[in-house]
Length: 133
Image (tube, rainbow, N blue to C red; front, side, top):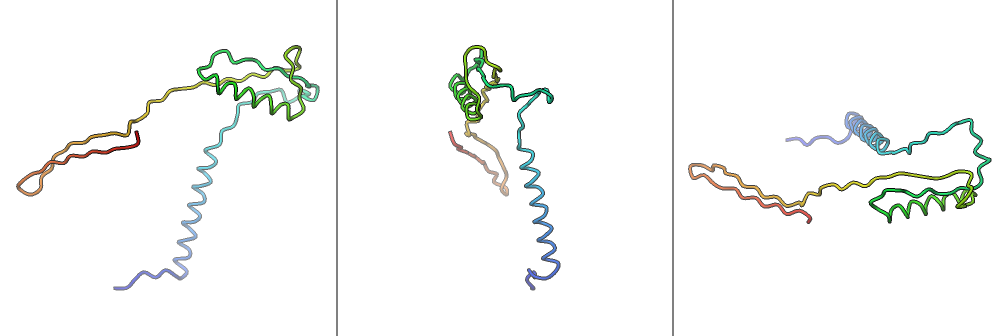
């Protein structure tokens, strides 16, 4: 019996082909994971005239802790860019929206019961699977 040869032109071309396919699939996977924020604005507007900002409060939220964190991050980002925070008479107002959703979680616990035949005697299969609870 001979062992497969792992050298030569054919093997090198085959490995290069598989590496190329792997690279292309990885790049497609990475580009499909990007999420771009939705932005809509007038491209002819002169944003350089804006100096002060104020934040609108989020009216309905099931997660006030996250809302506070988002407000703080928005405020700090705008302050770092040179804008001045003011509560009254701001040049522009900042608002955002988000929603939270509860999803059912799988308990990870399942039981299975089945039967099978082994020769003339028959048999019983009992399965117990424990996942992370």
